[in-house]
Length: 345
Image (cartoon, rainbow, N blue to C red):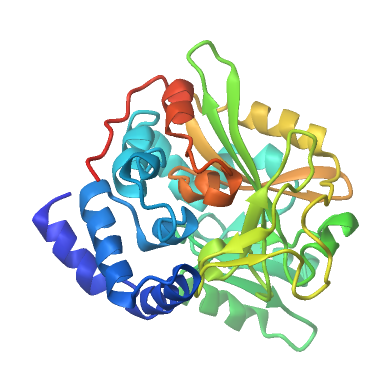
């Protein structure tokens, strides 16, 4: 990471959230605020770990450098994994929702419209058919640029069309009705399964991890960066741990704050179908061997929301998923068939 990049990170960092997070770490660990702040800066400089990773990997508690090094970092290790498992062209395909929807249209299993490729008349027909739909900025990420649009007979659809164009929300998608069984752990918004896959050289697909993502209160998205939580799913489709979230600070939730349903032991419906479905998806663009898929469920089965060309490692590595405090660096090296240089922490 260049000196310029490091300096720019200082000025663009989310300092409000970082301070709130560090205060919570102080409370949890008993360490001083400035000790934790300096330690986070040191881990970022030496290993490329973000403040969110520091919290999720429980580095406030895990202080042994050898144990810490078993957790891969976002800026050093994940960068190597992504660049070694994709091309510039494949990353562009996954980054742009309009290109992605065109490529994977048969797996979306819902209507969609690209305002950059259609007329106003096409929009009027789409909005007339779907009184509720989602509008997205094609290159938005982390839930940014997503709006739930609700119209009725009083809505001026021509004006709405111009407003969407002005906001660059040009990717429109029919609303998905969540599987009824999933509403107990996601009552406020659509929730998704984040599934990390790695296409192997022999054409087989390694499922690196299965995670449930759910909103705690957000009525539109379940993104962790917007305050959502996530937890691990067993091979049998059961939630294994409480949900963890890092915005505005690290918290572990044993049950959903709205419904009171306990996360541990909750069974994901049609999980075998989901696994088969994602293995099929993972083979469609061989140049993008490493993908974080966002999958949801309705009563008919799994639906593709999107594929992430840079899946954050923290979805895989939260410390609570590794009770012995030994992170999965060795497994990453095995699955990707590469060697990740051990950081000097």
